[in-house]
Image (tube, rainbow, N blue to C red; front, side, top):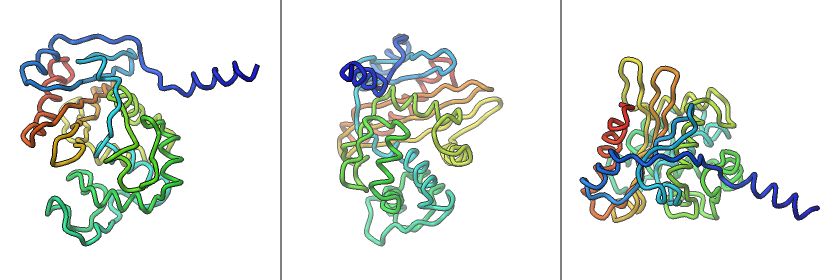
Length: 260
């Protein structure tokens, strides 16, 4: 009997994805014409279905890189590592990859310029035990933060798929994550990119192994009225110039699908 109970709970703990996948010829053509190897996923929470490009890759996990700043913000605020998104964190005083990172700042500004040292400081304040507990609570990817508190989302072992990203962000957009609604709103506010009449675009980029070859991300969601469309793009970055394709190709995909 115990064997069947164990199997039952193992099934419950396995990430579940919609089996309703539609391959988009329009998005396929965009990736082909751009000569990009990657995937794009659009998740319609109302219909519970995926549409996009490269179904197989959409289920493959990669390190989240700076897209984890969204979850890191939720966790840091939840445990009180910072009081709010404007609470100032120290960058540490060392020379950084980008000069713009060499300044103390709050999460609102840090996430807009993808400031790694600020978010590493946030993670260290959170601590490994609390970080692991919340990554598990949020069901983020493979839920493995390893033993290095300030590099696990950059170098692993934490990994997540495009489908998992889209589902996670859909839950954030709809106030369905297991943290306070005020904190979810605060994090939504700092990743708002653009808005127009009746719509808003939220998003965050990521780049494994920046500025060298690796996997690039652009993830987020679009709200149109009361409807939420979450998305995730990841792609192989072979040269620095490839990085600009993340948002460009993502927006073109959203337009091709009638979302933007």
